[in-house]
Length: 78
Image 1: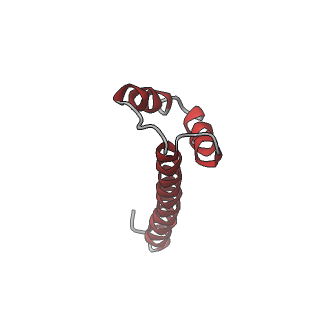
Image 2: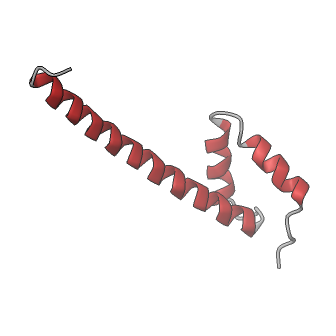
């Protein structure tokens, strides 16, 4: 059975995730590591899933907004 992560460990984890680009690398390492605490590994996997969903929704919204803007521009209404 894995040890419970302390509050201090979670604080360090959250602080590390505030660093751009390093956060994505760390999430991938933690999610795929067999030696990492299972709680942190599962949390990292969930974070990556939500990140992927957010990126996909952002792309869809940008395409939708671009379509509306293109439609309005072609009709001559700014």
